[in-house]
Image (cartoon, rainbow, N blue to C red):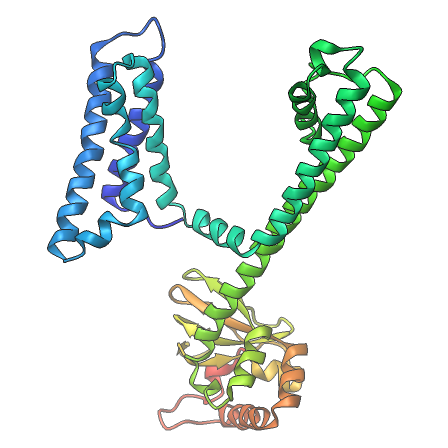
Length: 365
């Protein structure tokens, strides 16, 4: 969900109030004047929102782009229908039901809907194929049930539309019970239709779930790839190496004061700091590592346990490389393995120019 600002909170509050008033206006016992006033105030608010957006887009030279954008039409759909319905003579309790279109404003605030739309576009062919199967089963089941059950239950299966209604409720496994086959053939067909319904909706669910998973992996890969390129130590890798490493790394978004590793624990991965900062709690003075640094390689090089606790000092994004992936990757990129070993040896040197232990910065390794 996108971050909600103050103006958005006001808009959503007006939306909730308007929908409550819209529901109240349909209740026969409630005819308070304030309900109509509330609805008109909400409508005026949304109309003013359109005017403000149009004015801002005009000032920025984007008026034509805004008027042709889906956002404008979503906004207009929430304002125009009610006055038109009232002008056409529709009773207020019916006309204000068109205020339910205000709920469509939420479509622009939920990024997941845009993601769902992209997945449906990408998976349009398999989804359409399953829909064709749905229609085939629906029509054949309706025809067979009409022939098998129509003579005995003309009020429920006497026409094809009635039989198709039964087929829809059965294929969707809703089963209202208003029409039940009585013949052996009719019940056999009903059983096949119910099983087919489970299969059809299972296929739709599987296609959408796979699409969501693939899209999530794609977006995570892009984000991780961008983070990898920010780590100076990894910039020596060629494009193929960066892609290979990106597939191995696990992104970790940590809050401030989160413990990354603890002293004495076995080390099973190393970390690259993509953004943020961590503190290595060593004596006498804790040492901080910023974005672009890495730690934890000692545990992978010589299998030693963690010798210090590492805690984030601010919201931090880490890229974790598992020990198995580390050895597999360094076997394919010996130059990187040598650089890591050289860096580890440098960090193990006893004294730096500033008097601190060079290995102290990586005592968590």
